[in-house]
Image 1 (cartoon, rainbow, N blue to C red):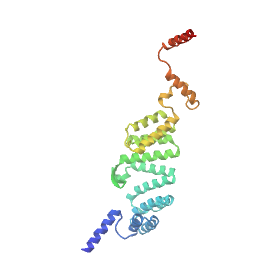
Image 2 (image 1 turned 120 degrees about the vertical axis):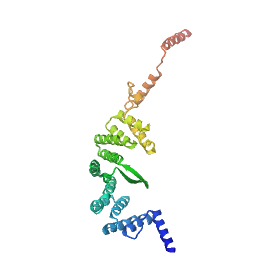
Image 3 (image 1 turned 180 degrees about the vertical axis):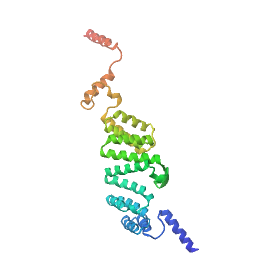
Image 4 (image 1 turned 90 degrees about the vertical axis):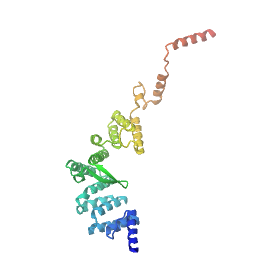
Amino acid sequence: MEIKKDKKEEEQFHVFHKVPSGDGPYVRAKHAQLIMKDTEGSIIWFWKAINEGDRVDSALKDMAVVMKQLDRSEEAIEAIKSFRYLCSKQAQQSLDNVLLDLFKKCGKVEEQIVLLKQKLRQIYEGKLFNGRPIKIARSHGKKIQVTITQETARVLGNLGWAYMQKGNFMAAEVVYKKAQMIYADSNKACNLAQCLIKQARYDEARYILEDVWKGKYLGFDDPKTKDRVEELLLELDSKQPPPFLQNIPGLNLDDDFVNGLEQLINEWARPKSRRLPIFEEISTFRDQLAC
């Protein structure tokens, strides 16, 4: 009876700490990573797991993630490139996703574009998700369903961002518009607006940002999204006067702010009654009589 109790306690330990059971190098690596918080030591065990063929799919991916945390992203990239041939077909897409994060971390924009185009081709050929319309993924520790439509929009969004990093805002605009047609959200809308601002197409950008602010896109209620919209609107206003100031003659806020502001005030304060000049004449005549 005592043995059963110990076995049950061990199972509870593994479930609670999300550590696999067993005594192989991969289990030891996860124990070092999650329980001992020894990330450097876990990498040694991950390498041992890969060399011994112990859960290679998970070992290579987990090791690359730990290396990224330790600012060893270049090493992680080389590890994936060198040993992914040992992994199963089902693990290749997950490894691509890890590679994309590593490329971003290292600022390797061209590599991102190549890999993202490759993923788009896999979608076109029906190879993504291993031919299934839906996959189960994890987000913040929870299992979620991701459709092929959502994944396509996500890949396009990442490709648009990569083009933005290169300064190719025209290409980024095209990609973002396609992504929004497939699965629109606030984040891609803000990025599209930024592309338009960079091309001095301010009215189009403002229209998109106003739609985000009005809640017309998924994710509009995220505080980070609202902050982003405010930042982009401030950038817009710095490049283009607000609509109610654009058509006022003689107002130049950049070159002659003081004179322009004075003229604006005079325009607003201009008397609307045509009788006022008559009263001014009477007042002047009365002052003369008093003298």
